[in-house]
Image 1 (cartoon, rainbow, N blue to C red):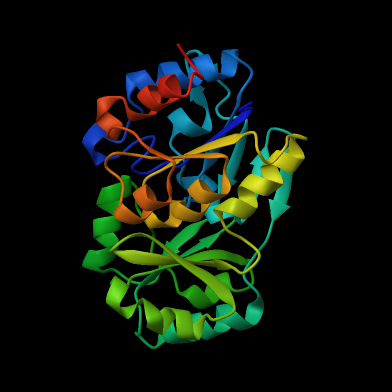
Image 2 (image 1 turned 90 degrees about the vertical axis):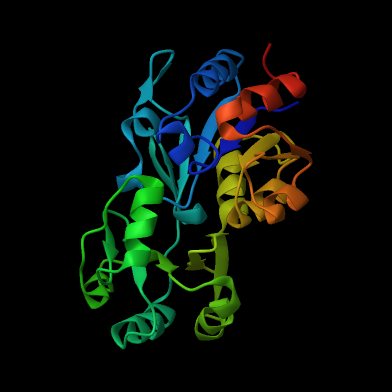
Length: 264
């Protein structure tokens, strides 16, 4: 029996095609899931500071927001009671990558617990800002080393991702889209966040369903009992899923939840 549902944000709960808003059908589905006693959990690459109010605070019928938040690709997990999973990239790999960023090898975004920063002013970073309806102040990445870095977003095309993987061989490198790749601690990942959340709520590992659209969702979709890829998702996400639903703007989440009998 499904007792927890995990939802990616960009391309799953909201996107440019929905004007960066949660579709009405998805709002109604989330509210009904909660009424049926299913934990609704966010599972995103975004940091807490970049969660819009409809996600961080909720909406009518879904007051208070999600039951828990798995953020920064699993590196920081928390609920209303506090943090229950917290893992940062070790100092040595952070320093290695920051050295390359400082030398101009990569454009990057640096995510800490309280902030997110861009390493420079570039069109690639502006493209991401348009994709997620957010902005990134520019800051020297060196200044973030003492704060503790949870994730890097490194702007390289898929064909050049091996450069990042070689430098950060002791971390996980994943990709949501062709624009950039995510670098997170080796002990982190979306599945790690799902596992920590299930343990936090004293739920069994076979009681979870997950929704996602990107390559960085693939391992989560495989890990959960039921993995649902959005119709607008990548081929990697669809290949990893048990079920492919409709596009986000075509009631994809609500239709999938009905398909599995989780809502009416």
